[in-house]
Image 1: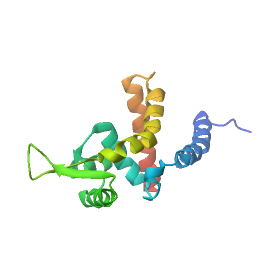
Image 2: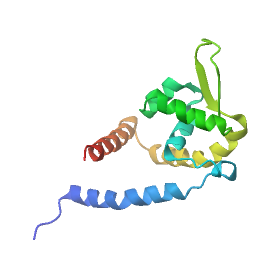
Image 3: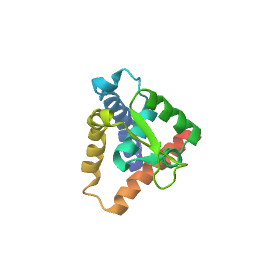
Length: 149
């Protein structure tokens, strides 16, 4: 009988971990102000970027989310109609529209999404920049490998 390959131990542990992570993330319910909007993970990602990095253009958001600008535009339109996001002219270039979190929704969104960012900050804080990059690159590689089937 052979002993398991050490990477298999890590694989086993990760296979058990990921469903728990997803389950816990799903249990973090949006505040009452946002519950009626049927927000999907893609909405959470968009709002997280705006919360962490501030107002951005649709093109910037599309680049960061790695989706088409039309997809972001549809998300922004949907959330704007619901009063969650706002769009305004860029003072530097009036042709550009800037997307931001609506002032009335900012506290609710922060209450909902800040625990995710805080948990990552606590987890990554003791690591070196190279170690943090390794974790991110590893998760990105895993995502790509799963997508490739």
